[in-house]
Amino acid sequence: MATAGKVIKCKAAVAWEAGKPLSIEEVEVAPPQAMEVRVKILYTALCHTDVYFWEAKGQTPVFPRILGHEAGGIVESVGEGVTELAPGDHVLPVFTGECKECAHCKSEESNMCDLLRINVDRGVMIGDGKSRFSIKGQPIFHFVGTSTFSEYTVIHVGCLAKINPEAPLDKVCVLSCGISTGLGATLNVAKPVKGSTVAIFGLGAVGLAAMEGARLAGASRIIGVDLNPAKFEQAKKFGCTDFVNPKDHDKPVQEVLIEMTNGGVDRSVECTGNVNAMISAFECVHDGWGVAVLVGVPHREDQFKTHPMNFLNEKTLKGTFFGNYKPRTDLPNVVEMYMKKELEVEKFITHSVPFSEINTAFDLMLKGEGLRCIMRMEG
Ligand code: NAD
Ligand code: ZN
Image (cartoon, rainbow, N blue to C red; front, side, top):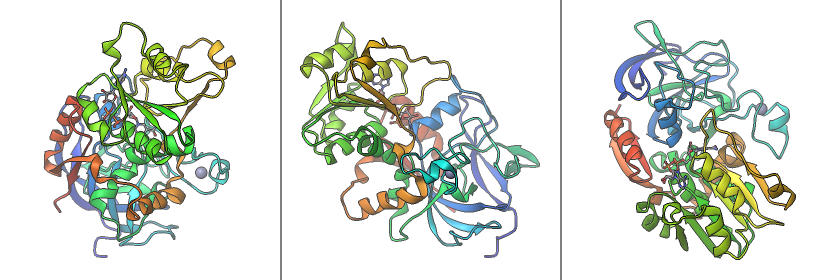
């Protein structure tokens, strides 16, 4: 390829300061170094995690930064030592990686790779501790190893899943984070059996994907919990049978759920990022067998407080990154679930804008409108 080994100048959306609109800038993207891949991003979507790190309220501020981690693209060139990917391959970047060599990657139970697990404070490549992005010589930081709000980005090979080239990238890009996370949280971690009652806290894209998992697992009752009543109508399309708005009750929502279900739900999946919702999601499960799974990303200072008696009463609390999927090994199979029409992703995509209108996607998410907004790269 004509661009291989050279610096590429392209458009990227740069977050210069916390909470300020992103600005589309011309950035220089250095060639990939050892074990790195330069990817041409075709579609990227906005996930709430991007918004948290852009607001940087409860997080370490790292600026200027190129955010973005939910995307689909095509390999432009590869660095030294990369043998699994070649220019032209279709890939989904993932915010947490799989080196395939560490104890976690070798364990069937874990996707918490020692080398490439999510690190939200690091703004550089792990190989040499430097950024591959710059504007007139000023380095611009990376975000969770992906930085997909750029026409080209450099990613460690272990954070890229090679997928079926027939899969439409404008659809399956949403599988690179939120949808797989929610789906896996239910199917791989909560594991409800057929006929279960499942509560889902937070009816954003991640929560609705967790709900999709509950539906696929054959749950007979699916209770959606959200503070925004506008989310309820949409959730019906995902199999939601009951709605609870904590604001409509004087007592804690866990007590409402315990009463509604005669002792508690069999499984709950928390997809809000709010620590109080996390506590409610745990306390509302049935004693003896209930399992709660935390998915939402908490604020840095948050503390989870519950009475230890809840554990003695045999309620189980778990958490997950990326729905326990191993990015390189498992994500191609999630894409195949879509290709075989077992999994619908279209219903998660409510908006689509050109990349130049990325701030519209932020506004929609801040207003709680829609689920996923796809941004189309024009180049
Ligand atoms: P979203 O903002 O679209 O949805 C969150 C929903 O939670 C909203 O509808 C909101 O009204 C609701 N909510 C907020 N506080 C609540 C409360 N106290 N009780 C009930 N509902 C409440 O976000 P999303 O993109 O669906 O992401 C959901 C969460 O998952 C975020 O915290 C995100 O950072 C996290 N996430 C985690 C992983 C992971 O691997 N663990 C991956 C992706 C996203
Ligand atoms: Zn590993």
